[in-house]
Image 1 (cartoon, one colour):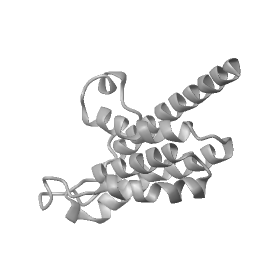
Image 2: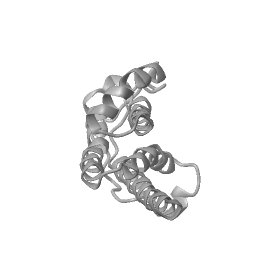
Image 3: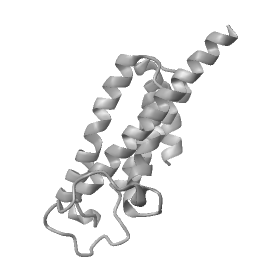
Length: 157
């Protein structure tokens, strides 16, 4: 269903942002992935959900957490594609605007998880830090790839 919606929405997204359809589709799919993996009911829906936001640890995940399969590394990985696509945007102003909007997403996700206990998810401040880490890693990779592609294009021409 997400694939069908993204294919239908891609031309509009590409036209609004004045980007090619491939980038538009990748942007929609990366956003859809975040929504589907964070705001759909968990298998534990109906289970015990903390009535508060866990803020015991706030900070980026450690290298050990990011180099093994942990909740933190999965939260990092979830946002890398979004950052990568944003880093590939053709205009700096667009890239910075989308990056600023993307920074809000982890906070919005945790707020929704806190306010909607029916989802069976718990608000955790360290998820925000891990999501932002993934966004920054992806953004840096996208900017590097964009720069390399531009350099190769200039050499070929």
